Image (cartoon, rainbow, N blue to C red; front, side, top):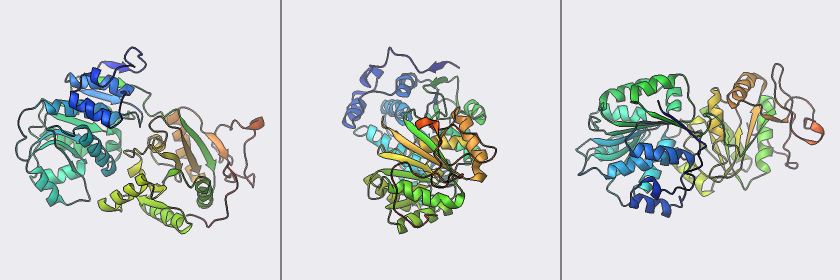
Length: 428
């Protein structure tokens, strides 16, 4: 498998026009304010335009959607006539509704004014309405695997004429147990097709997935997979579980005018935490698996518009949330899967901006914390408390190299570094 690694300098000044995209796409990109290709786009787009299968590995927030979306729309524009009834010419699979919706919106913008019609099918919406839209045939379909299986079972869609396939965030699809659904879908696709697989990490199961879907792919790696953006300032507070709510309230209170995402491990925990923050006067909303599709879309609109400054979410929002204004990410609960930490903190420091990621580690979470540091390949700076027994973390680079102990000097006693926040009720 050819392997193209980032770091080349000769093509840094290339424009989208020079990558071989149609003039209409280049004009749309210019109107969207997209002027210069990112490294993953520079290397993936020419290979995809040449018809190669592509395996792209790049950290979150590096422009993977355009890396596969632009050549995909470009090649669909060249096809003559309309797709047959119920047929799909190009298919993009994504693990979550939020990511699928974002891909749909981006590709629809790229394809504006072209002959390519972009459609979206995800769970939480009417199957009948989706089936009716698919009946006319679809140029480019964005789907979650589960909902696509539902529509296939109803005979509402066919894939035997699909010429292009993209698997986005393939590692998360494996984490969410979609491997069996992906195998079913693969069996319905023509063997002669172009496939692109994009991922931020490379778990062992990915080899099986790539063998099943890709043919002699070119592997393009523009950054070490699983490594967070360099501009994210990471820190950890060692705090008892019961003290996390107060600490979160103090941190959020220090920057009420800046957008923040708070990650909870469970759906019920996210909802409970959101309601507690609202009771304290914070403009907070929540997104998790117990919300309907309409509720999730309304919550995301409120967060994007600034009506709500705090989004409390489970890992459904760990990927696919591209809001450049997010300044802070809080891991209220550490993730069970260490790689998800990378995706969570990737919600900040987007579009070249700086960002802050704070983790709260309770005694029972030391195993998860060690796994996270192993994935990162380095220690996370301690901003409060001391590591729980059996743990290890780096000392902060403060004055005199002393570790801040907060008010109590005990594990979990760390307080926010920016001023004293007013007294508040516990958030969770």
